[in-house]
Amino acid sequence: MGFFAIYMFVALLAMGSSLYFILRKIFPDENPMWMLSRYFIYWILIELFFRYFMQKLPVMDIKPLLISNIKKSSIAHYILGRSAVSFYNLLALVFFIPFGIVLIVKDYPTLNVLLWWVSIFALVLCMNYVNFLINKVDKALYALGALLIGLYALDYFGIFSVKDVFGPIFHGLFVYPATVLIPLALAFLTYQMNYRYLKNSISLEGALKSKIKEAKTSDLTWTKRFGELGAFLQLDLKMIWRNKRTKSQVWISLLFVFYGLIFYTQDIYSDMKVMHCFLGIFMTGIFLSNFGQFIPAWDSSYYSMMMAQNIPMRKYLESKSLLIAVSVVVMFFLTIPYVYFGTDVLLINTACAIYNFGVNIPVILFFGSFNKKRIELDQSPFGNMQGTSATQFLIMLPVLGAPILIFSVFYFLISLNAALIALTVMGLIGFALRNTLMNSITKQYLAKKHRMIAGFKEKD
Image 1: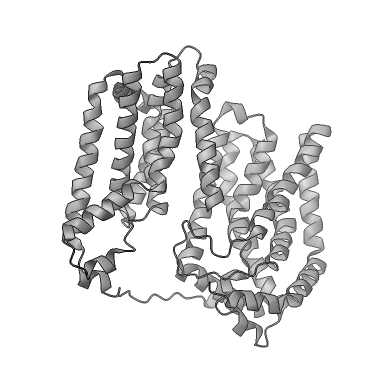
Image 2 (image 1 turned 120 degrees about the horizontal axis):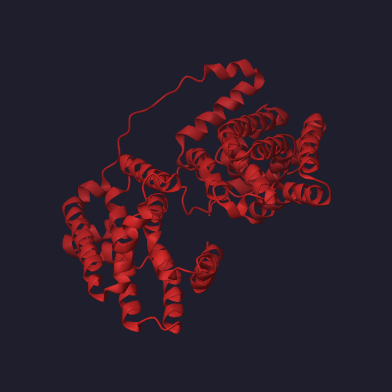
């Protein structure tokens, strides 16, 4: 997480420092500040959307405070004040402050830039406190997603210019310094709303009260048609649906189906077939990589019990393979509408799906034999690095790097059709050698069984 934080800070710092020059190059006749203001509404909606998943109210210390002689108002102020200096709030400043420094160097009014920074931080605080009000409200998340997609669609298809409406509003924060009072007032208002809610809600009884949930069951008898694999498949499906971290992998995978819209809709990427290959491998194999890289750590809490039973390791691995294979097929069908951007896109996605099916499934299972870190399934999935080791980073090289390298070599040396045939043939060869590969992987798991059991038992 530390390395990830450093990476984000460095990346945002570099983007903020170069954004002025990038906008100048792309829009030579437009003011970079004006162009940034036009897209500001999308930044706010996207940040709110991701904050919903990733940022939680810092209430870890609230129970000890409640049994102390401390006023509820002081506790509420402490919680809200602590959230104001969170990592997520600093990210925006790391991006916008370098951009403002470049503006000052380019002889933009210093006072306007300084007060614009204040406005940005006030808006960041607004999003911080709005997130606490809407967090855990699923309808708010759906509304945010629908609003974001709807506004972008209106802009993209030329139905209504959202940028022309919100651009002058956010640009006014820079042109008219006195408008800084508006975001400051909004930040104060959202703070007060959170303060009143917390002051009235936090109590010893409420903090310590156990949550009561209605037990939910699902009919998975259809898995019996898979024979011996059905029992393992049923266990995996129950695990995925009943636990936070595994369930999140499903929703994240479905969400990333829209990842292609970021690139397919941009003219600059229309002829970059290597980028299209990356998208094909990524979108059709997103569940494969997200879920598969932690096999068998998902079962770490009862893995030793399973290994003590008369359970064939080969059947256990085949059930995982079947689950991932189904995900590849489902994700491929979900990407078919991208044929709207050209038949080449559909052909690339098809070749990538076949490659994922035949090659990357055995690869991901093989690397799973190196997993020795325990995963607690009931923990929050966001910002949770449990079970992560160097294996998870190294596995991206063969899963993403290898197919892109193969595609690039054949594409640049021969043609697009040759690159598609190469990926398809590789996938078909992998599928043809499935039994041999699974036998080899099974031996690998059996050889490392006791190391994995010992690793999964370590809870710290």
